[in-house]
Image (cartoon, rainbow, N blue to C red; front, side, top):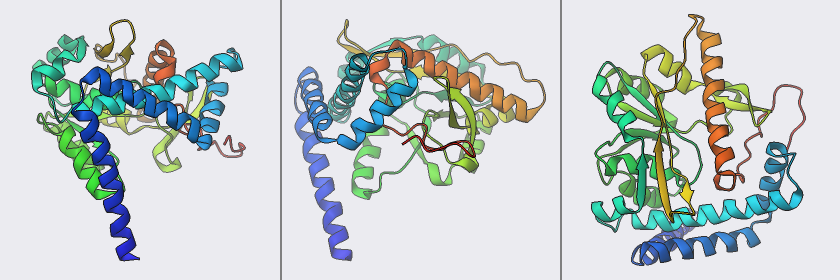
Length: 306
């Protein structure tokens, strides 16, 4: 069994590396175009993911027709494939070449928040567009930071991906041992990146509405921000069809007035962050990760959705 495990690890790594290396030596537009084609192939083959996506889209957009939701689901797979093409470029292109693939907006918000130097700073994003770019992109413009990741089960693939993520000074924090690391980082004036838009287990979640449906949402970011008084800056990286490049949109700090009741404040801030993510997804509805079971964890007594 051990030999089979090692063989599987190697074969998965060899397949992943061959795809990334092949795409990485192609011109970026071609790599992203081929990535989209791979995404369309995955759409045809992944029946379970299509079912999950269709269920999610019915929940989020009940006002749309089935045909309209089908278009969004296809765009979701296109977006995932395009991101694969982009990621292949991140380890092979120069700093200047990579900067040319991105159109940054609002970097002044990040610069101003960092210049205050009165505590830590939290960057938050969602699985929208090229979410890998929301961590990698700021480092291209002189703003590396630390961000939470779930380690990939295959350690060789994880090493390959992590090496790319850290190329320009970023650091990654393992989600499984993160609590003390995150708090220490913020209290030492560090910059922390988080993605709070996926389904969360009961012990780490509160239920707040997401597209009008209660969703188990991680409250840790809100609690960290309130306890350390760290500003929260939104960063999103959607694809612009018009400009044929990714945007990196950095917003102003999220405004929130604490009441002094931590439980109420954590709920209020978590709700606000969830609403901000939803509003950005509504701008680019075909680029969110609809194939994730976002509403899997249900309030007590509610039936399963999937």
